[in-house]
Image (cartoon, rainbow, N blue to C red; front, side, top):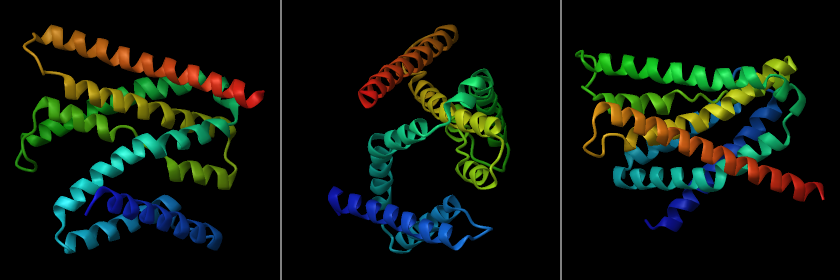
Length: 228
């Protein structure tokens, strides 16, 4: 199958998830949220592709979906969240948000990576290197509390609690992505351990601060245009 067919299938699955999610929300179901329904639909679609023995196609589909998500879908989602955000409680709790985002995410990354590495030394799991362990830890440490935030809206939770959870979920994605890219690029040359650590820290700081500045400038420019 060509790329256009794969994109059509991805769009079909997205529209299917949106449609079923709308009817689920309209029905007032208490035990299943839209994100859970999306996971179930993804499992069914993956199972069907698995039974059709199209592993190569599934790999290509996953690659194209990740590119499509990062380039086309994720920016509008973040823009919409920030545009409709209640700004006063967010900036009021900005210090707490940063503490949870940076410190909490780094604790989660290092804890999960170390556990993953040492579990790999047992018979319960294949052996993984430190680099592979930290790459995996970076990927799974950025949690997205979509269902939690949806539930907060439904029960009219405290606005400060909502702002903290929402803000942390935004920043930890960026930290996780930058950390993953930094880990992947580490060990590519003949450097000492000290040089690798220093280079990784500098690479992380450069990418994160650069991305933050680009995002801030773009946001201010768009805000100025929309205001005028």
